[in-house]
Length: 113
Image 1 (cartoon, rainbow, N blue to C red):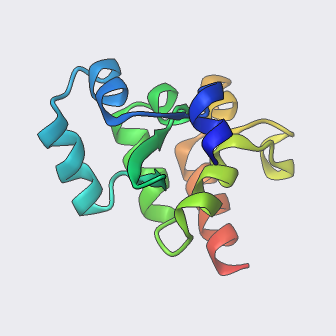
Image 2: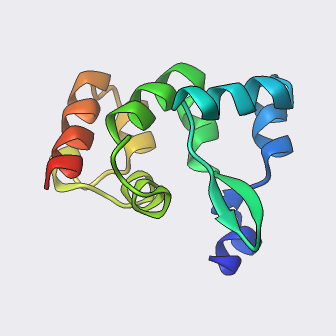
């Protein structure tokens, strides 16, 4: 996982907060509500950089749908291409007009698998 902090897959909380024009307290409150998830590496919290592209609302919806998965499983779900999304990642699917409801359904199916 350390590699992911170096290659940009994982970003520090300050970077996510800045990208979303939020303060760190707001980001931490979102984690507490389950709207976001942290991936801890060497006792330091990080966030999936793909969350930036999702935006606040979409990230919260997907994170809630994935709530029973481990943080690393959530990260993998968000970064890999899915057959149910025409071999696109979650961000690519949303950018191409895929309804959020389809992504939420796919996320729930991943949790139940």
